[in-house]
Length: 155
Image (cartoon, rainbow, N blue to C red; front, side):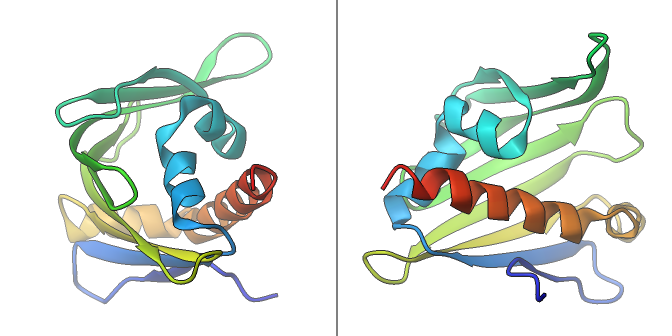
């Protein structure tokens, strides 16, 4: 089955483009990125902090059944324009990846469909390529599938 989330990574560049069309109205797609309760559901992680505004910060954390932290990420919002754009930094703690800069653009296609464009910039070509060696594309596609499934019930 073809992945709905597309990742375009040009050789030798330190960025990539992610695109996905959703069977969701624009407002619900944005809400899935702006409301901690919904983020927790589709990302499968705890939202420790979320200040959805310019200069606000965020932090996500996932623990195993024994209470050990297995994933932790944080960042700062540089732009938070409802139903339009989010610009943020993204840093995984306790990982060998550096900080990345993410530009999320939310686009209305029809009253019932929308599109997400993500431009992700890494510090180096090596950092980007290291990320692409992981099941990054597959994991992002699965997360976006969950997002669409969960948020479609809010229609």
